[in-house]
Amino acid sequence: MLTTPGLTVNKYFPILLDPHYLSNFTSDAYRQIPFALQDLNAHQAPFEMILLHPGCPDEKLKFRLTDLLKIIDLEEPKQIFNPSQDLPSEFLSKIEGPGVQAARINHLLYLADKEKVNALITDDATLISYRYSIYQHHRIRILPLSELRDFLETIAIGFSVFYSCTSLINPWTFDTYFQATHTDNKKLSDFLAGFQPTLKDKDLAEHLRSFCLNRYTFILYSRSMTRFYEIQHDHFTRSGLLERFGLAIGYFVSNFYLYLWGALEHLTVILKHVKKLNVKERQCGISKHNVQFRLELRRECPDLIAFLDEKKISEWIDLMADVRHQAAHRTILIPAPLYQDTNESKMPEDEIRKRLRVERPEMYNLGEEYIKYAEPTAIMLWRFDKMKRIIPRTFYVRRDDATGYFRDPVQSIDHDLHILNSIINKFFEIAFGRSANLATDKIVD
Image 1: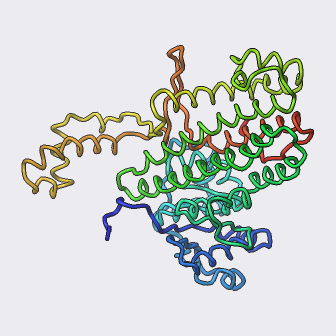
Image 2: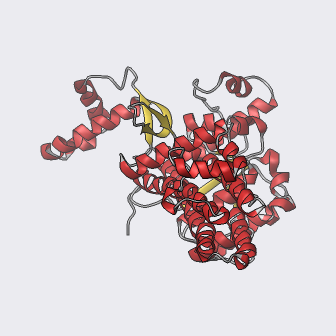
Image 3: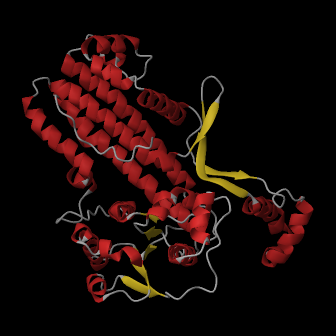
């Protein structure tokens, strides 16, 4: 049996509830979440989620969350949360100043850090506004209550438990889960069911079926697994263990962007069949380099060309082309932290060796042969530990003109999915006369 920390995935997920917003949690809008948690525990899922509550909750909440709540100390801690001074100054002033609100936020962050929770659930406007900065510097994940369902389902999917918080039938198989339960994939499934019987072009019918039931599903699964391993990666980082699962994140995030680019290309093929464009399938493509397709599109679908030429959409397509090209032909996308040297991290090796002998004496009791191979790695890890982390994870995208840029694909993944959704909506509107109405609310301007 494997018991060494870090050799397998984490299976215990504590989630901290903000008691100030518990009335939201117990409302009918979210009643499926406590039921889902209880249902998963009752069916002996291969993981455990527990809700941490500061102090004793009211009887209504206690009744609805039987066996899920773990009460933790509500008293003012002797130690307060010590925020990174690299956080935005406006946020620091809100949590370090006087007043009940500042003390409440500071106490929540202290508890989240102390308990090493996987998420802090709150609808507090201040915490939500600065959640990405807090995550960057402290690895504390702030989630609004509206995102808790997705968080729970992502963890379940990571363990191959295809569970939907809103479905009366559970669990599902992978083959039907997303198409039947995911809001946007179900919209595409329903769209297909309405249009496919009317399509006389068999190639078009097959393209539409494959797009709605396969390609988009692969994108969603890749997104879920990227998120799952991000949660795992964060857990081991918070626990002070070696950072794990970077390769797993790289695998699924590469798949996400390859399938996303394929979806953009696939849309152009579908449109070619609907509008009977005078181009071959291999001439279709979303890029401006597909000159013949663009000429046909400008003649038959000027509204679509105007949409694709909008600055935000055009620049995003170019960016996706860069990411896809790197995933397909260059260095594989393996997101890693971006560090900056400090005075300590640049210390001479001899000085670091002296410190290691004090900090890790057990390593130096294992013999000269072991020390010969282990010490260089220990020195490297010591340096990394003393560096300043600028970005939790990123990769460098290189362009053909030798320029490039850093991008965090994990934090961008939902933004990119929702831009794709907006493009699908527009293509379907032009091709079939009505939008697919996929979600676009996570597009960041």
